[in-house]
Structure formats: C-alpha cells, structure tokens
Image 1: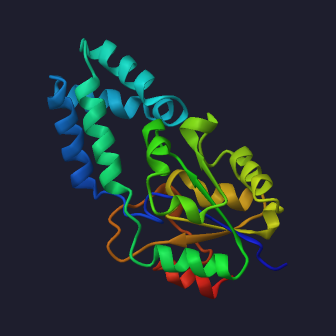
Image 2: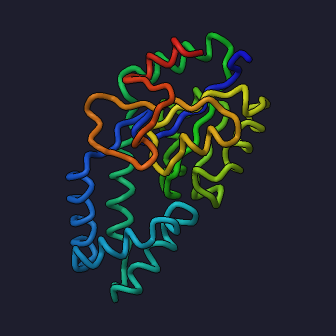
Image 3: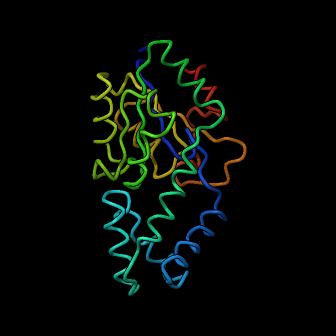
Length: 218
C-alpha cells in the first residue's frame, strides 16, 4: 500500500535533543533560579514526568514547588520558556525534506511528548506551516505510545494508519506504538545523538541517519 502520510516525532527527530550533560546542567540552573536544592529538584522533576507531559507546565511547577517549599516558580518557568525556544531549531535537512514530501503530495503530521509551553511556541517556528496537523501530549492529555494518539493523527490527516510512515528517535517506545496501530515505523539516529532509548534497543525495523533519507522510503 503506498504511503499517503508521514508523521514525525519532534525532539531528536526534527530538531536536536539536548545532550544528557546539558540537560542535567539546565535542571541545576532551574533549581538555582527558584532557590531549590538541585538534587531535590531533579528527583521531583523526574517524578513528575507523566504529569508534565499530560497537563500544564504551570500545574507541574506548582506541584513540584509545593513539595520543595518554594513559593514563586515564575523564574524557573521563564527560564524554561527561553530554553524551549532555543531548542526549536530544525535540523539542517528538515525543511528541505518536509518541502519535498509536501511537493510529492504527502500529508504531514507531528506528534510530540512535550510540555505545554512547547505547543505555545510551535506557531513561532518555521516548521509549523509545513504540517497539516501537530499534536502535543500536554494538549492531548496522553503520551506516546498510547495508540489513541496515532489513530487520532491518522484521522486528522484523513488517512488510515496503514497509509502512514512514522519517523522518530524511539523515545517512550514511540516506534512500537506506531507499529501497534499498523503504521510503518522508522528509527532516526543521527551520528551526534547521545541518547539511548528503551525503544531503540534491539530495534530491527528500518532506520535512517538523516531526515533526508526518509525521501528514499516513501
């Protein structure tokens, strides 16, 4: 069956994900911004992973800061907003690849496990106009690999799941989630990617080392 739509992950796929050491450094800076113990903040932050990705970032910070005895989380929220804005830069081959896919008549979707401030920034990006639909887990109230997200995206693109190729770096077992609803899942692992995800270990499906290589698969 010919491909009618291509669905992309965001972090580690369309844009670079921050390397692990940079992520840890930013968590420490965030803790410092609100006067919290860095280790205590890191533990609380990671303990709110699901809440952060399925609800508002304000509610997440409210919960974390209540546990840590912090009154004002606005400095941390402002810091994170600028951090997310700085990361929303497409990889060098992202825009040419997306434009070529659109030129071929393919529908384009994006599904990201992302906190609410990312969706608020999405329309500022050069990526946004190239997509027919974009879903953020914080807005949808569910995360990949929930099959409802993939089916909902297929519906938004007016295609069947079997007509879709899903491209992602494998975080949160997103590739397995795409496969479960009948999509063709493709792992992207660029040479400079330092993250290893549960969903990529032992992956035997198709893989690419650059977004431009997706053009050869559809």
